[in-house]
Length: 399
Image 1 (cartoon, rainbow, N blue to C red):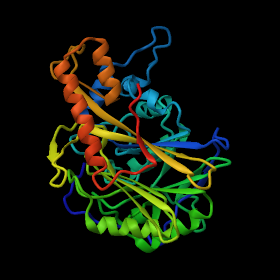
Image 2: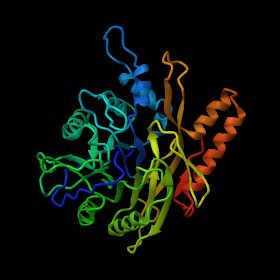
Image 3: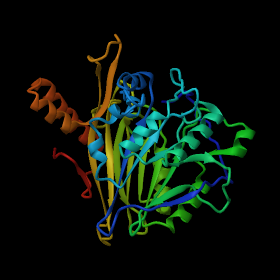
């Protein structure tokens, strides 16, 4: 979500963060990385987790990561075959771990749930990472590091050299580079803060092109995660499309977008050097408490803030068809929590739409609602492939 309607770009000409190489379990058969949309710790999301916290009687400690594991109850199996899972962490983790509407924060237990549910890379390049100010970002980084969660897109300049580069390279025999940027800022950093931290600016084109050139030398395939666009818009802005095309021509092979909170179409084009660049302009929300619908003027599809996709990228050593994508249509369950003793409690959980349909069929549930879900999945796919259908992008339907 966006707090201020006018974005304030911040240009860090001199800022380049640590460049990390992370080994994986992959071999020559391929390396798979999954990407999700926005994870936003709205009050009702946290309340649902807190209500489901289970304490071990003997140790007096939580056995389900403060209850946050329940957020991933249905979606966890989608990540089990991925070497890495990347999500947009659109909130800080900073003491006293309290928040208020539109100013986010959460307890460290949510990061333990990330680890337990295979999320091992987060992007901090978004417009809410400074919701708890400078100290909040430093606290978030420290806690992420203590839990061995890789972060990209923002960080501290402490112990950072001018020769280092923002991003991460994962893999061994196959290497995928991942870099992250935001084009939306809720806060203008003071001069003091600029000396200590950085947040990568999508619109600092020369800086980004330099990052691309340097990390491209380290990897076989390069992904850019971009937090850009306008909230609730179902199509990308022409300005952003043009800039993304520039980055693709410079070496980016795939772009994963978020911030609009709704799904936007995917685009694929052939670059001047013969590569096929794939652009998922917006994946939508992954975990959030939003409930609006926005009709796309071109496809006439109703795009909901409760519908999203997971993109799974697999890169292989095959020189001709060396990568492909699997897209998982997902919806966010957002219903009254009947097991809660609280009057206004909600159950908020992402689930693959086809998995949800099969669960309802097994329970002999409302056939009318099942038909609704089937229609929503078909509409989602229609909007996603509005520009064209692409041979190397498949929809996961088998459950």
